[in-house]
Image 1 (tube, rainbow, N blue to C red):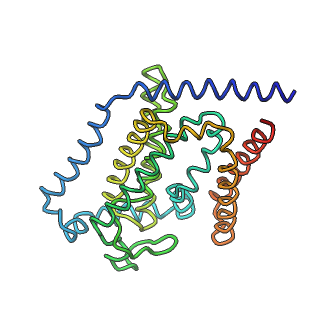
Image 2 (image 1 turned 90 degrees about the vertical axis):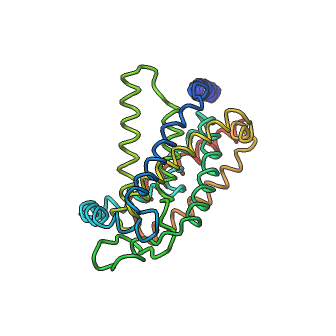
Image 3 (image 1 turned 180 degrees about the horizontal axis):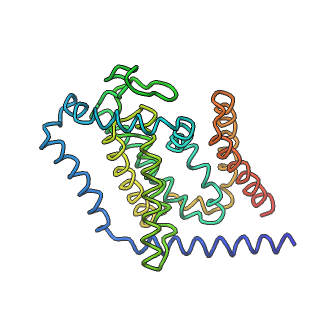
Length: 290
């Protein structure tokens, strides 16, 4: 029975991983044209509106920020739970089982996450835009959770994380049929936009922050895919002897999530913790029985 389970697990892993590798291999550099064009469009829009300065950037978004914040914040519990998905710990916890069944996804995720972290930190320092809590009277809009009065608004780091992960998933499990492929694109983009605009709803970012963050995240995901396709720097993910690294990491993440639950008790943390525990059990089982 045990041998049958292990054989089935290996067969599933081989099939899923092969599909991911095949999907990644079909991508070419022209896929970067759209996100780069979108970034140029944002810059041109700000330029023609005389809003390339910090003051102009904030002023041009003030009305739409207040409008979106007032609408989205009408669902505070939902918005605050969903916005946590922009935390890499939370989002990646949902995908930990892919380490067993489609490690190529995690090769791309690790690489893409490093790229996105670099983009996020460098651009936040470069632009140094004050967040809404630092630019507006806090009594005039809704802040859900902790107020963030820093000067690191552009781009939204949560948005970068969300679209980095979604981009890897988008192309990893891309359907073959054109009509289903279109629906898959639409679904992923729609989910992504819903998640990133919760950052406006909780009062943490301006709309352009999350739009730019989403584009940067998409680019980061693509770069991660191209790097892991050409270089084998994360090929160790597919090697069972390195599973103890994940086991230790998952245990640490479980303790962090338990701490978050104690402090804020959000439903999304329970889902993330449950996902980690399932993955921890399965990976430990496979490693022990290797």
